[in-house]
Length: 125
Image 1: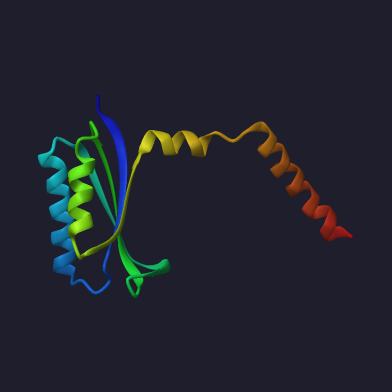
Image 2: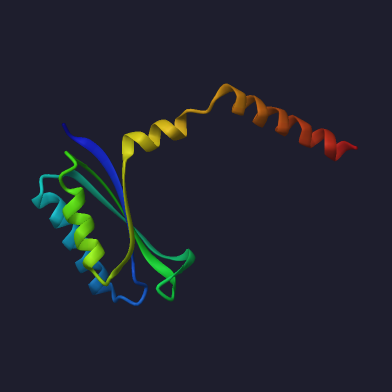
């Protein structure tokens, strides 16, 4: 059964454009060789990290969406763990992330609406 996965990895900021393209190609080919389909790679570029990782303050972000049976995850993450070019990676099952974001409990929605109504009243006073 094919599921949709979302993977983000962060490459070292000191890599050249050719090295970045080679890494992106390498991981895309690893996915397709292991049976993944609908591979969509989005290059986010160089961005500031939330905290310093291995003395780097910036990183090159790449987001990948693909469909597969889950057998692609372990070999891909092993290759990233062994690579010196990748400083962080994370793979999520996309269906889980969508259901969490879209489900706002009625209580949370009520609290948010009440807070928005209270702000204009506080400004008038």
